[in-house]
Length: 362
Ligand SMILES: Cc1ncc(COP(=O)(O)O)c(C=O)c1O
Image 1 (cartoon, rainbow, N blue to C red):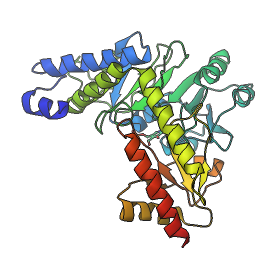
Image 2: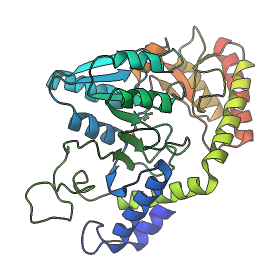
Image 3: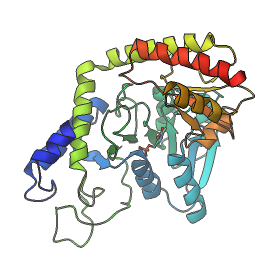
């Protein structure tokens, strides 16, 4: 609705003279994000088309030849692949800390890894495979104490778990707009604290400092080359507005209720194995399941064809995480109920899953 209204009624490029509406909109969204994530300076919020671009911008813009990065065994390919590329291109050293099979990174293991000098730590807040929620405060405190730059991939948590970049001591935060911030695809953002100044990845028009041949130093222009996706950002603004109206406590309450219902339902179905936390605490409603001895793809196909239920099957762009959860190479069936699923939807899912598992083993 917000996107369609913006496309029908607003034109003009936000970075150019005719773009008054778009410029205001961009300020508004930056203000909303700043409020939600405790960011004191809105100009340090950079709009990106997704989380991957923000993660690349930071990793590729900061790391130099021979630098050392510490990361975890639960990361998404959005982190693993740029690190692998830089291992070849710049000979960086990547040290991967093993998490528990559920996906929890132990702060003591991180502390030990940081006994040696490092330039960057990059870890996710919540696993997209198991739903495990890392203890952000403890992990970021270890990183800060070691004097290392701290980057958090908040792809799963942004919008549903409170994050405060100052209180949590986060230097770089990257998140998509299209997941729990309820925006459209093609939106996302990253935040850079005043302590980091990555090299830009993309150079070009910003609508500002047109007399300069060099990319402006000014933020956010330094990183926002080219026309922004302001129609998409209109949708992101509406999504954040809705979340702020609901409030974190009511969203987290709903998520915990969902987790409780799904966990109890899964336990009651014979033949299902849950990969990830079996409790409501420190987990989000993202559930990876398998039926031991059966191909996860067969279960996902049954759910889709017989019950019209869409799940995501396979490795979820996170092969390291599946190795950690002992579900590599087949992967799992992932169920990710959202804010708008009702109790009836969850009951329908559990009943259908029970029937699908019976069909699978018959
Ligand atoms: C933990 C995690 N990191 C990064 C990403 C990449 O997000 P995007 O598709 O917005 O680039 C995802 C997406 O699934 C994710 O779950």
